[in-house]
Image (cartoon, rainbow, N blue to C red; front, top):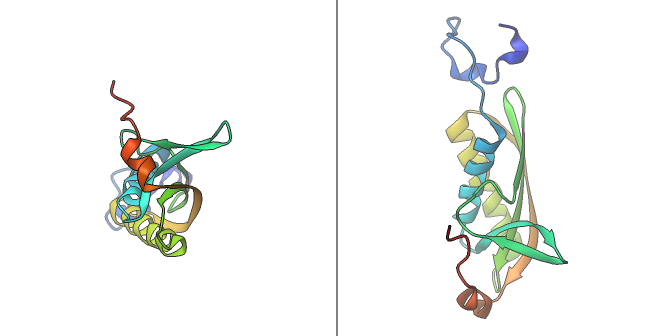
Length: 137
């Protein structure tokens, strides 16, 4: 095998590599999404701008609202979040960065070179209570 195909050489035994390990972008995105929504103050992930309003996604598909680029030994993550009203946004964003970086590095062995957080919206307490449950399929 060529060195280009080895995605995670640090996870193989020294000098006796049985092959290569490749982690799909969706796997890293799911890990990052789970880590992000577990941070206090994060109401959910944003699926993008739909009709001028950030669409808040439920907890079924954690890779939505996350974009990743996986290299040989590193990953770059972009998380699009919606925060709860009243939280200190800069603190929540920093906590998301730390949580995502830790989760990606611990679970995959890849170095999280960058975790960029984009705050797409704010959810008010009344919106959270009145939000009908979707994605019941």
